[in-house]
Amino acid sequence: MKKIFYFILILFFTKGASAVEFQGKFIQGHFIIGKTESGTKVLIDKKEVRTSDDGYFVFGIGRDRKYDVVITLNKDGNKQKIVKKVLKRKYNIQRIDGLPEEQVTPPEEVYVRIKKENKLIGDAKAIDSNLTYFKNKFIVPIENTIISGVYGSQRILNGEPKWPHYGLDFAADEGTTIKAMLDGIVTLAEPDLYYTGGTLMFDHGHGISTIYLHMQKLLVKKGQKIKQGDVIGTVGSTGRATGPHLDIRLNWFQTRLDPETVLSN
Image (cartoon, rainbow, N blue to C red; front, side, top):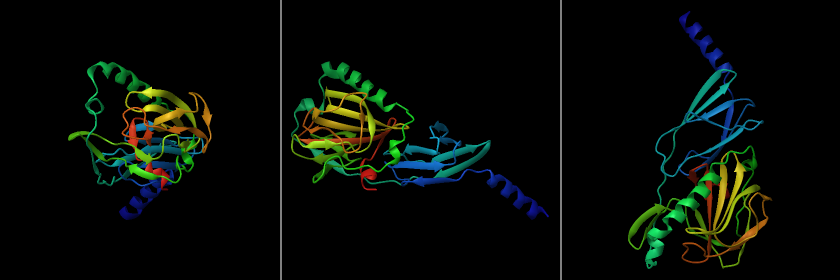
């Protein structure tokens, strides 16, 4: 009799649970798209995230995350908790020697400028719009080129360890055209930031943004709607760059993700 009663309780509990599907891998640096029933409230690590009218939500896993991801679904008061283990990655060590000292350690007089520019970028990353462009497949921004720098690699500049590299670098000649990887809205268009030179940022919805760095020319403006494949600028070596290349970034709010994971899907 006790066994029958227990079985009924399990059926009752699971009956109200929301179905959910995930696209992506639970690995450091990856980008996860979730799909659940319309009207379901979704929390990632106890923080509520935006869900679209048709049940889509998105989140990212940071480079150094070591603990599980906890996803909580709440549909009409019926709660379901899903725990996903995060797999670790190994990252490359990249040494760059012979840089001018001002490119390794900025002079004190530019720190005010850097702080102001970091706030501009941080504010753009914080945008939480209801756009759902993130659901679509990304394309490469430059064709017929090689990858010269990868996400997560630890950079040692003139023998001094620095922050990890959070982007994906494409080696290309100066003036090479750059295409938008995904539909989006331009949230930042700055021609001369200290670290990144010509810089564009795009909002793709639900906290997902992309950034294009070290550009020579910016061919779009803040607030402009861009379609995937549109030419948005040209490759340069502006900011603290060692040569002509395009550095792209992928973010979920302030969490920096690996762009290669969405380009290789």
